[in-house]
Each structure stands twice: as C-alpha cells, then as structure tokens.
Amino acid sequence: YHQRNCVTYIIEIMYTSIVFLLQLKFGFSLMFYGGTTTMEEKKGLSYAAVLLTGLYSFELAYRLQTHWQLAVHHLIAIGVLLVAFYNWFDYPDQAPPVIRMCCVFVLHASTEQLCFLALLLHRLLDHHEYTNLLRHIHLFAAISSYVLKTTICIITWILWLPFFLDSNNKHTSYLWFWRWVFPVLNFVMLFVQWWASTIFWSLSRRFQKMMIREEDADVLRYKNQMRKSLVFSTVDVSDLDRRKLQQHVYGSFEKPRSHYITN
Image (cartoon, rainbow, N blue to C red; front, top):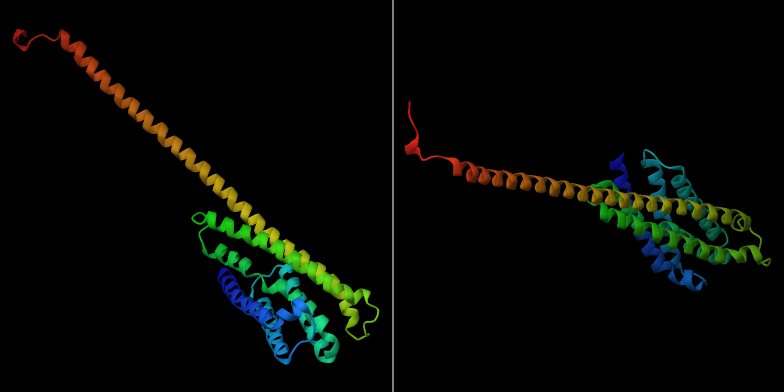
C-alpha cells in the first residue's frame, strides 16, 4: 500500500510538472490575454489535457484505497476537460472563452507538486528523526494550497460570469453545462482542495506537537541526569569527608605500635 502511494506521488510530481510547463508555454497568452489560439497552441494544450486525464485515470485504477474526496477531485477534472474539448471541436469559433476558463481551472491539478512532495517525504522519512523538516514542508504545502487554490477559484468565477450574464451568447448544446453545471463543480473542487489543505495543516500541527514532546523529554532527561550526577557527587564528597574525619579522630587516640602488649 505504501509503495503504491510512493510510486503514485513520484509519477504525479513528474506529470503535473509537465502539464504545468505545457500550460505556460502554450496557454500563457490565452489565460492572461484571451483571444484566439493558434494550431500549435491547440496541440500543446491537447497534450496537456491528455496527460492529465491519463494520469488521473491511472491513479484511480492503481491505488488500492482512494478517499472519496480525491476520487471526486479527479473525476471533476476529467469530466470538465472532456466537455471542454468536445465543445472546442464542435464549436471552434466559440471555444476560446471556454478553453481559457478551463486552462485556469486545470491549474487546480497542475500546481500540486509541493503537496505531492510533502506526501512522499511523509511516507519515506522517519518521523522522529525528521520531525522539523516534515513540519515545515507540510506547513508550506498547506499555505500554498490554500492561497493558490482559492486564487484559482476566484479567477475561474470571474471568467465564468460572462457565460451567465451575457444573453448574447449563442445557444449551443454545451452552454447549459458551462452556465449551470460548471459553477457547482467549481465550488465542489474548491471544497475538496480546502479539505486537502486542512489535512496538511493538521499534519504540520501534529509534527509540531511531536517536537514539543521531544523537547520536553530532552529537558526531563537532562534534569534527571543532572540530579543523578549531583547525588553521586554529594555521596562521594560526604564519604571522603567522613573518611578524613575518621582518620583524624581515631588517629589521635591511636597508640604507638611499640606500646601494644602482646599475649
């Protein structure tokens, strides 16, 4: 079970990094400026979508145990990408706003490298020996996840508003999905991401408590050692003083050997 999880984390770090780089290279101008896409950009974003859907499908099949929150996260990402690309190929003229919104939405999945690294180290490293390192990396993973995922969700909502407010949008078979279903999925995705961030925060607090207990144990051991050393030194000194006192007292009453009367 642990080996499968470690293999999954390593693969996820590699593939999500590739997807993120493809998004930056082929979707940067689309995400930040909008407009149309070239054929090269379409190919690059298509590769990113195929890699991500393949990764999540593999993970759902490969893991022995999967939390329902993680399964919901993966299924939502796969479903939104599939609908987006069907919309893209069926209505290419109206697809750029959809693809722009989905490119930002997919950042939920392609910016989780620090979280996967924290989980991998959590499985591989000894918790008592690397308590401080694990505490910090879980803390950074929680903070980055809270900030990034919330920002991505807000931007996605801003890009979604024209689909809901603009009555001039040409009616297609996909418009109802983007207008009514997608906001619900976006909210559920944010809830799942916050749940994961809370897990990392809890793990960080747990390692912090472990450090406090270990520090208290070290202090207690140090006090016990000091108490024992003080007791030993006191006994040694008292014995030495007692022997000197005995020699001084009894030595003053001791007669010379020549005066002893033998039988």
